[in-house]
Image 1 (spheres, rainbow, N blue to C red):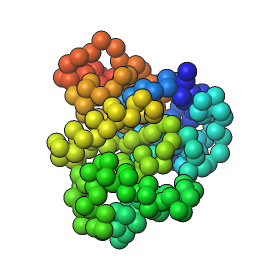
Image 2 (image 1 turned 135 degrees about the vertical axis):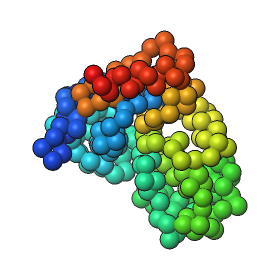
Image 3 (image 1 turned 90 degrees about the vertical axis):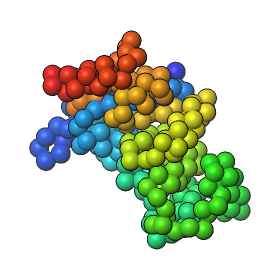
Image 4 (image 1 turned 60 degrees about the horizontal axis):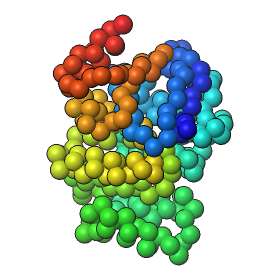
Length: 232
């Protein structure tokens, strides 16, 4: 079953088609890495798929349901943006409570839910710390927890492994693998060895196509193919 289906997706920005009649589908309960060197293409696609930005034309279907409207808090999809989407002046706890409220979780259950997630992901001792005091790696982990707490069936992660330490990277990889049983992941990622370790499917992304990569097990070979794909 397809978790996501995209048909003829086009996005025009400053008279340039950063996405040009892009069509693809993603199977349910899979981990999918989108690799592309054009940051603008990656960013626009992540926002459009998360329903936080509108395409110029084209259709997006989640579980065969057409999503032709903007919805920052859709029940089917959530986005961890590359900018993390955290309020720096709030504490970790306040950030998570805010997300729970925006997702319309019942007020009586918010505190219990936040504590449950913080314990599960090893952040219980940072609940009262302001986000601005956290390391870049911890901010990334908090943003991941915030995204997962939205409890959507499809999760989009934009550069989750960029600029983080090895320990946090390993934690995120293991969490994603564990959650695959109940969620579908689309991960925008430029790190070849991480893609090979984590993904069920690896795709090269450019403005016009999403090309699946098969039978590659070496990170250097994957990097070379990616660079060559960008040149074509």
